[in-house]
Image (cartoon, rainbow, N blue to C red; front, top):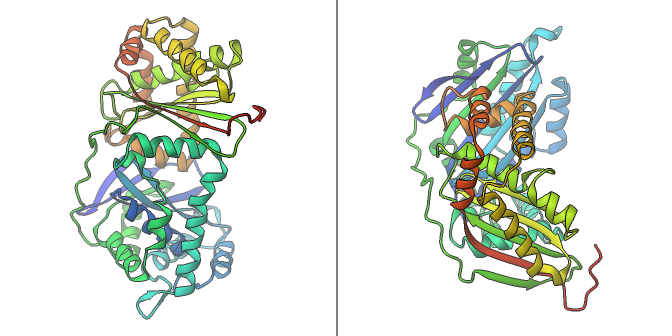
Length: 425
């Protein structure tokens, strides 16, 4: 899918030369070890770089330039994957081949250079008004989780179940970490990101690897670096309490359950766990949805998700406030069914088909190709979609049952309203 070229130590270029799109997509990903403090700082930094720089000091000025570049799309986001924090500069622009003028791609690359290397500094610090504004934006983003009780319940579950572990850290850090962030500290984080982070650069479009490599070396003069070693499998701590109930001003109960699995992303049984999650609660035909929500009418919603980086499986259910005990019992019964291998041919076949369709749909976009390869190249540098699809097709019911039997219940968290509140949504 991608050809990889080492630009310098710690900086790799991945090129997919393809005529599939009339656009050129570019992503520059800065990766470092995840801590709450780094996440907060880099989230603010991503906002600042996105909205202004030395040449275009306002968001409006920057948007006008992008409009003049044939509506080029440009954004910066801050995310996490396992124990890594990732800041990505993402661009999609029209390929020069389809324009009446030449040089648009180079203008876009020059703009990306300005964004990364010419920040909106004033006396060697980020402009104070911009710095404070973007800190407030990130704080508001973190605070918004309290307005979505499902997200809030999942946030509390991970906080309580994995205290001190990267699984509990938000990609935006905490409000406290944002509040204590100084302009000087952010400037140091910015310089560290450019000079010390591991960098993966992606391009998708009708451009040869040699052409792209020449552009990258001209516009992004990253020096060599030795990125810090990131611990991929930190030990998962035991929770202080295996079951916690908390109350909020709300009407619907939120039941969230965490299980641990020895199977992580890099394990050869990773495709089996994907199938196990799909059969258990990942899709509308799954046991949780069919039996707990549809047959028992026990939940407004119920599903499971597999967090493969740390080998975690979550169940999320919206239920009546007084029904948590029955809901836990029914959910456990569905898992026991999977453990016994009670899996129909239809459940297995639909799960394999849906996983395959999801992967193929994602690969229909340049953005999807970049994100999937950035994750899966850790499985095999020669990753192709056929690799996973073949693995899924080989998975048996017995292997799924074995994977379910390897799960361990880690923690149950229930967020409920005050006693006596009605149960309507």
